Image (cartoon, rainbow, N blue to C red; front, side, top):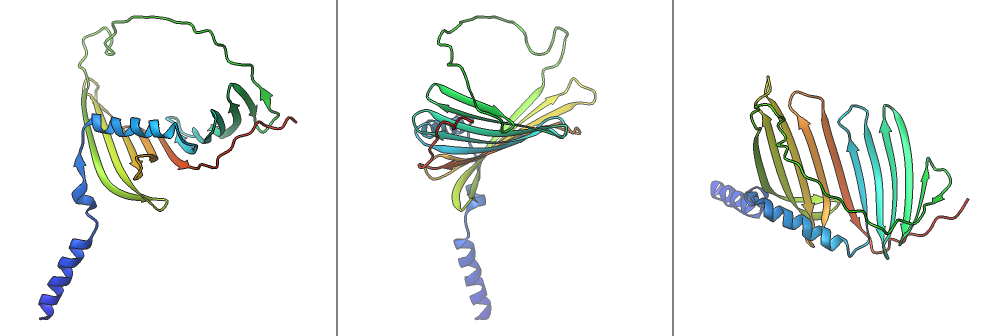
Length: 227
């Protein structure tokens, strides 16, 4: 009887567990691109914030930035870039066609209005990307998956991952580049978070970026007060 009870409890626990791993599956690039473009379209109609951080390919290179998109084509950003231990701060505000900028918490400067004339151009090329000599094209593979369900800041999200691998087999030794893009969408199809990583095997060269989105209908952006 005790054994039967234990088996029954185990079955019930398995049945009630989240089916995250069973939900994981391959998807097409077209499916992922549609999710991203649909999210971008929805975002245009909203007021929201982006919190972005990056680390550069070179050691000691990084950035932190906050972007706010308000109503009536208004925009505000603050950024801190670090290179070789030196920080550079910048801030900007745009309301309609009027823009203001400042550096290192200095005085605000009203920028001149944007030019309305457009200059067109055309060009052509026949480069293959492999140079003029006889070289072997790299081997490329791409895997795109729906990973499962994750919680980010208390909200349930759908997690997708794209891994693109490029092997330069004409190198000695062969060189492998790996690009990993990850996206988290909420139930409304809006991006909550995305991350990107670009790295080379057996190398310290690595670029990463992480962006989180916060949707806030109360965002208001006003012109700076002159000093």
